[in-house]
Image (cartoon, rainbow, N blue to C red; front, side):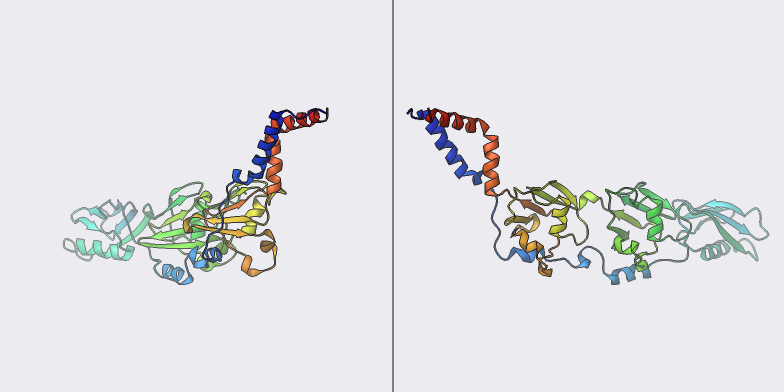
Length: 335
């Protein structure tokens, strides 16, 4: 009987050493200390949207009566004085100019108050002055819409609009695009910011349909601003859009679930901003235990490693030339 050549023995030994240490080819960090599960507790709604009290404050600051502003086109009628009557445009300084009286400040005045200011200015030159004002175009009456909408930019309106009306005019509802999900938006008024839960609003909670006013800014964050990442031995690894109260099972489900080659006992959930690595067993997640319904946040990473047996099979496939040499060596040994 012929013996194996020495080179075949070397190759066999090398392959054995390689496979025995194959775990080192896929470096998986261990779980962090100090009870990492606490970092994954479900967040309160107030962390994602503003509380009801903030909505009430915004509703209270809404102005119902229209105030003139720069760019508005108004029509002034002075009874019995056609030479003083006519159309005016509120200038960038907030003034209009009338014959004899000159510049009159009307910015941020109601129609009635602006008419009183005109009467006061003209009363120095005329007796029994009476004035009325009509707004022809509300050019200053606009809300700026930013973010993930079809038509970002200023949106003009004649009467104070609601949030739903502004989003509709800006093409803010991505209902025609199944890959887009509108979950929340921000309304910025001066130094105040209000985060609205759009899902609740569209479900019929009209208390969130706040009335907007001039110079409000509506911001809709992009879907990719809120992503989680599912990597490793899953059917469709990649970045997935984060939805409100999205759980670990939700993310795994969107990624097609773990592969048969995945290590179901050591699923890693990593929260980089907290430096936390939570190690979970899939059976734990599948158990009907409310404590295991852990919510995700932006930037979280779910990683499903390969099982040891799957790694061995993987390396045998990728190192097929070695496998062929072993087969040849076996054949030589039997000769």
